[in-house]
Length: 80
Image 1 (cartoon, rainbow, N blue to C red):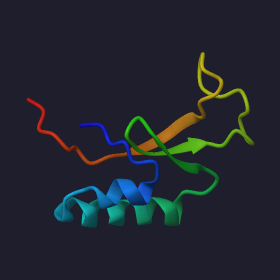
Image 2 (image 1 turned 30 degrees about the vertical axis):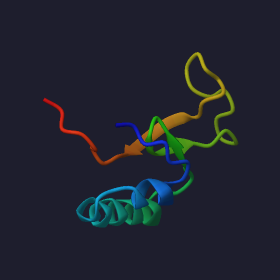
Image 3 (image 1 turned 90 degrees about the horizontal axis):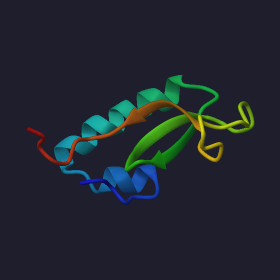
């Protein structure tokens, strides 16, 4: 299941309680230590990307997408 949340807070709020704690700790560590990147929602997960102000050309063929650096997600469904 891909999240339809449009903010990191909404994404975290839809997680089961036992996953919220872990994702919140990871997110806090990332935000406390990662400087110069934007936090956005993309592909159903929290993403940290190079801002357009630094790299306006964007990502590969789609110049409207920022360059990804790090993604944070909690698996909602068991994969075989």
